[in-house]
Structure formats: structure tokens, C-alpha cells
Image (cartoon, rainbow, N blue to C red; front, top):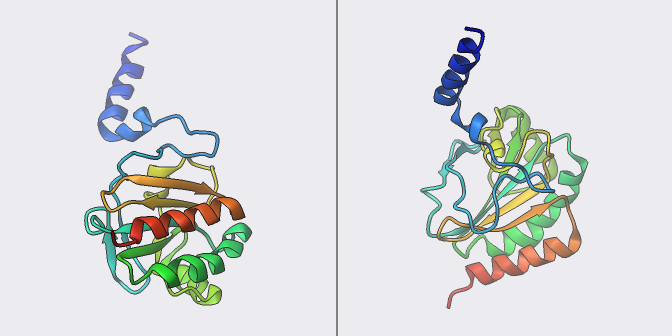
Amino acid sequence: MRLAFPRFALVVAALCFPPLLTAQTPDARGYIVQVGDTVPSFSLTDVNGQTYNDQSLLGQTYILQFTASWCSVCRKEMPHLEAEVWQPFRDRNFTLLGVDLNEPRDKVAAFASQMGVSYPMCPDENGTVFYSIAAPKSGVTRNVVVNSDGRIAMLTRLFDEDEFARMVTLVDRLTSTP
């Protein structure tokens, strides 16, 4: 009789919260996805009210840039994303979405303004999108490059200049017309 409750609780948890019981083990950088995977389903609305999701972005290359206003490494990377990624590629069937972890819309809008970025900034107030990509407490400052087929083409972590340069080269290649 003692085991009946835990089994029942496990069944309820499996039915109500399947990702909790099937979560992948994070890699060394905290990712629960890998290059080649289809990007997990998501929907984000930027601070201006424009909605983006994995289906609406099919057919173009995009980056999900995970950030937060309190993150000093994010603040270091964002001007580079604006100048070296968003501005050069924005007219090449490319989107860069800032995905701000666990902060409300007004704070995200103020952060975008303070940082001087013109790419769309989207609150991820409950971390739903972040936690479909990375493990809890694994840290922001990460970029997920997604190709036009909706597959993950590159995963970055922190702001490493060599890795960032490789990401810029990849985005250039993925957005070049044949």
C-alpha cells in the first residue's frame, strides 16, 4: 500500500508534466538540445507586439539570443550582435531575436533601449523557451542558430570571440544566395 501513492503521483506527473520526466541530460554547456535537432516549438512576442514562432520562421535563418538585463556577459555581447550580425544580415532573410529570461516586458523594453539594439527583444517571462533549450540554472549568454529548415546549426555559450566569429561566418553562409 505504501507504494501506491508514489506510483500514482508518478503517473499524474507524467501526464501533466511530461517534459519533467523526459528531460534530457544537459551537455557540459547546459544545453539539452544539440546541433542537428529540430528547434523546440516556441512562440515569442517582442516588446512591440510582433509574434514569432518556430513555424513562422521556417524558410529563413534565425538566432535565438538568450539574454537578461542583469547579465554582464550579455551586455558585452549585445553590441557585437547588433553591429556584426543584425545590421549586416537583417536584409538577407534573417532574424535575430533577443530572448530575455524571466523579466517582464517593460524591463525588457528598457534594457533594449539602454543597450541600443534594434533587433526584436522578446520577454520569456517564465523561461518556457529557455528551458526547452537549456537546463535550469545553466546561465544565459547563449545563441541558438537555426537554419531555414528549422534545424539547429550552431550553439554558442558565453561570449568567446573565436566562437562568435565562427557564428558570424555561419550566418553569412546560411543567408547567402546560391
